[in-house]
Image 1 (cartoon, rainbow, N blue to C red):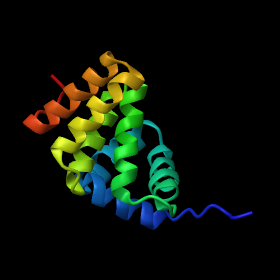
Image 2 (image 1 turned 45 degrees about the horizontal axis):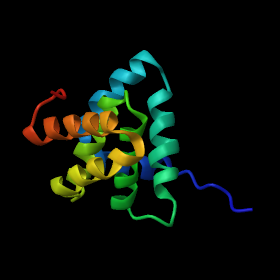
Image 3 (image 1 turned 90 degrees about the horizontal axis):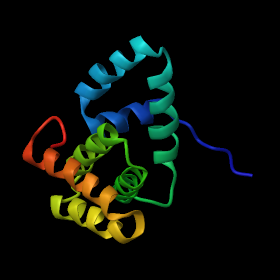
Image 4 (image 1 turned 90 degrees about the vertical axis):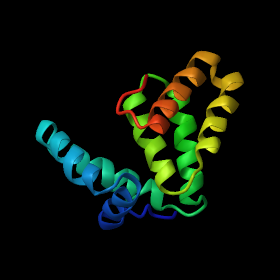
Length: 130
């Protein structure tokens, strides 16, 4: 059985690459004040674990994440972050829009529209989805 590889340092490096240092320093610090240790667990297990696995490139993982968050619904702040992250690593705006459109027959038009609203707000440079 292969053991899971968890790399805390790689997780924080990747989080910085995806979300930028302001998120690592600002958002995580605020969350840590509220729920001590929780942000470290998120970064270490998700970005230092799941995202470090072989088999998918970072770009593909981001597209899968966009699809999953859109399908889930009700997680607009996280979707907003991942739209920004996707743009930061080179996923094009038209590709992000197409992910949302492609999801409509699978997850429903309302969820696809909600995803499009988040993407549109990010692309317009707004802090909050319209």
